Each structure stands twice: as structure tokens, then as C-alpha cells.
Length: 161
Image (cartoon, rainbow, N blue to C red):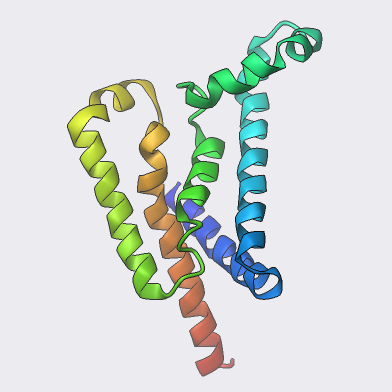
């Protein structure tokens, strides 16, 4: 699974750098909010709708059904964790290498501190992939993927074969 997050970080930085160069940082933030929303809705459909009786029930109760699972134990699966992690790293994904490295270790420290202090027993007994705080731990491999993208860019310029 960490390899998948590594690939996401690689691709995310590549696309965000190009988007920032064309349209600016505001476009980067808007695009990431749209991606996170899309992942949340797909996750909601995938993990939430199968428990409902009918589409009519979903149509009539959509506000409750949409907002209730935001903190749901069942929805903190891969898709939501990816979306949340992307939001966590948006402020630094297009920044210099040293900022991303500091952010990597800082986000991991936040995750470990929160787990040790108050959340560990609950999270590990009820959720997968770190739960709602998992975005801070998965920021590490995503940002590592962005560093691999930097390395790839440099190696293409120095070794053109």
C-alpha cells in the first residue's frame, strides 16, 4: 500500500506543478478540493449506499446520509484517506525539497504524538489505515513520491538516455 501512496505523490506533484505554472496556486487548491470531493463521493457510494434500501430513500435523505459519514468509522478507507492526505500536503506539494522533507517528518510526528496521547486504542480497534489521523502518516510516502519526481526531473536533464 505505501507504494501506491508513493505513486500518488509522484503524479500529484507532477500535475500540480504544471497546473501552477499555467494557472497559479489558486487553481491548484481548487483542483485539489474538487479531487477530494470526488473521492469522498465515490467512497460514500462504495461504502455507504449498499446499506440503504433504495435510491428513493437516498434521494429523500441525502443531506443526512452525506454529512453523517464524514466521521464514520467505515468511510475512513483508502479513498477517503487518499483525499484527506492530498489536502494535508497541498500547502507544500509545489514547494522546495527542504520544506517537503521538514513537512514529511513534521506530519509523522503529529500523527505519532496524537496516537500516543489520546487516539491509539480507539483508532487501532475500529479503523484501518490510521483512521481520521491517517492522513498525517500517509503524507510521508506521498511527499516521498514528490521527491522521487524531483529526482526524476534532475536525472532526465543530466542523463539524457
